[in-house]
Image (cartoon, rainbow, N blue to C red; front, side, top):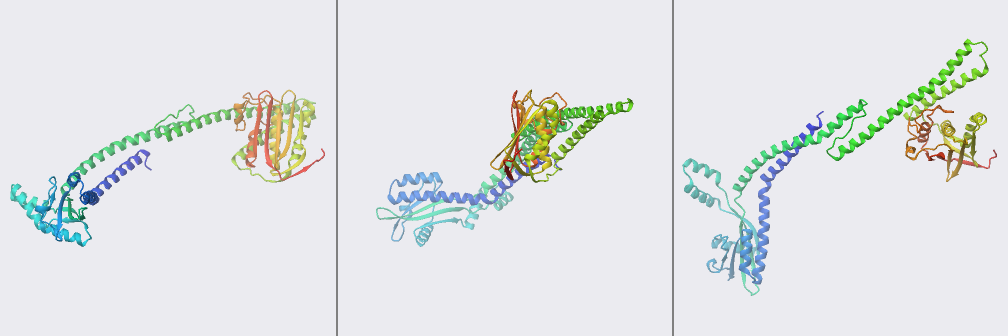
Length: 501
């Protein structure tokens, strides 16, 4: 595959070649027809001006002089008497600037043809070939220096003259008739075409050279910023996050560099958060493992330490360790799309109540006040296990960040066939500039790692993935120093009101 610079150079040269071909085709095949058409339009336009002037007998000679000189026309006027033009020596007008001697036989022939065509006639007429050859030979005999030169010039230069002729019989306002003949030379064009062809050869050579120079320059200007961006991208692939994408040249490259700079910043932040996560998870894994190992060694080495309390500690720490591992696996599966939702109808309200039962010991021992507000039992169609996981993680997050009052409020409301669950705490809250990032994987508002009361610390990432899989709406409201409210909404299947609790 060719590099961009080579392709651009090829395209530029191909474009230049096409332009040259079009110019040569136009010069070879369309120059004479276009010239003839343009000349014809000029003759016809000038003829109309002259016939109008003759018809109304207004400024005839001034009009003829002006039009004839401007358009290179020869104009002849003949009074018509006895059904034929009068003797041109007595009754004709010849433009002194452009003079063409007409034989009276030609005038009569033009007149008869004009009468046959209804009073107006336009045509192109060529010289007789024999007359043209005779005329050229006379010129050659006067100018040729030798027989060989004369022969060469003679063979190359014989060309017939063509003239555009316009005739009209005009009835003047004084009752008399005037026969008008207007002529203009159309050819010879061969000499002109030869000159133009020689110019085209020179122009083509210059154009090709300029095309090559411009193509090389343009391809370098276009390809250079892309090459610089590619070089910087390779450094980024090596995890050199201090690289800058600052190549400039045109808008698309600048937009690409801005995007890559943003990606570089995000990758650097993600890698940093990954390192923090690994450190935090290592801490969370090491703590229960240390406790399990420590209590196991105590029970093994010290008589009388094999008590139910020590065994329960080992069981609790093993459960915490298993929960952390399961959360990591769930998060990985949810974000990769490998874990599909198994939807069915179930009571969302009962799921919240079951979550509350898990916190009974926490409420009893640590004085937490966890309140559930609901006026009806709501049924939804979703994956019951995953929605329960969402509820558990939101409540657990609120417990971990509860304020001094240790109060967590879960409110269920129904509006327009949609149920909303809100989980509110009165803790430290979240700054507004950090709210958009709290759902991101690895993100922590509090960079100082603290072992949670309950849970693994990956709850919000799991919540986001599960709710996205259910196409549910979710969000957070928070005021620093006053607490936060996390919420999500789902479609309602049915509602049972006034159930006694």
